[in-house]
Length: 181
Image (cartoon, rainbow, N blue to C red):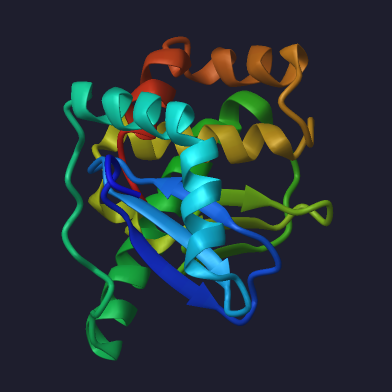
């Protein structure tokens, strides 16, 4: 498309077109291999309003820039993962004194698109890149996932639980949105 600069990625796993606007205001279009360039251009033209709005939003933010970690070596990854595990366990110990929710396993992973998750089985998973965040954002992420142990949704009850440990969760959540995993 003429007005919007973008990177096109073809994926064998993609079943439909997807547009991602990253926190650095770059645009990535992911498409199945069988989609033609003209189909991609039409899709992007149809979504141009949304894309331009997101680009504008991200340009106004003052994003936190994480180090480029896409190509860390195995030894460095293990070290970062261990540091993240220590940080997360400390935060869980501190925050779960407020909640006292039972949980099973705590895992640190290389999650591409999230900071954390909680399974129905009570397993807590965190992105190893959490180690690079300011402490208050890491604490918010851990509190968020702990609260999913009780409420596996984002209802008002869930947010009330989060507010017990992190009263300013809205501000922290907003700051976190400016960071691309």
